[in-house]
Length: 241
Image (tube, rainbow, N blue to C red):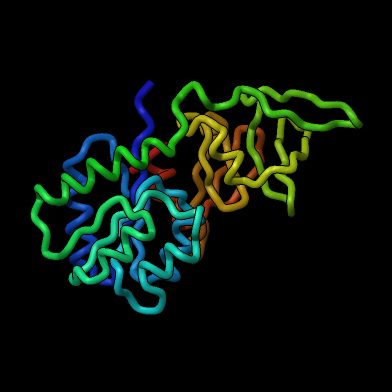
């Protein structure tokens, strides 16, 4: 089974700067760019929605700066490389535990050095294969039951709970969707929306609705929405061109 790809988000208000990093990442093995953002507010939304392993982020952007994004997200912030045209922000960047700091314009060799360092840092945060759970404990009528993940068809958010949908039955667990997502093997489960995770092999049809909305129909007939930020990655996982 292939290694889990490193998921990267690129944040910069300049389109050419974003493209430069994307082109350099295309030369690296087992890397997927899960999205881009052009300002701080969009960066925060993308990080919470896409859960990248690594973020390249410009320091100075419209609205929230890269530093403000890191401060707001706190422990939610993935491994981070700051990118900027001004080197006076370097000290602040390292105070925020950035992995590295790229000053524009940077050459390919300097980027590769930063990327290698960032990749090592990001991979330390990603659970190794074999650490993913094969059962999830649920409480049912005062008893604890272990639900095999092989039987979970999809998971949805429900207030402070998540609901496991298993062969027509629903089991509530008091866990956040992000926590569950991190426990499940990404080769088998995919978070299609902030409020939904599906077992990939359960997807029967990819849906394109009028108005630019997307969804999937599962083999059990259930239809679920796909967020626009997840659409391209899901299409790639399903082999849709």
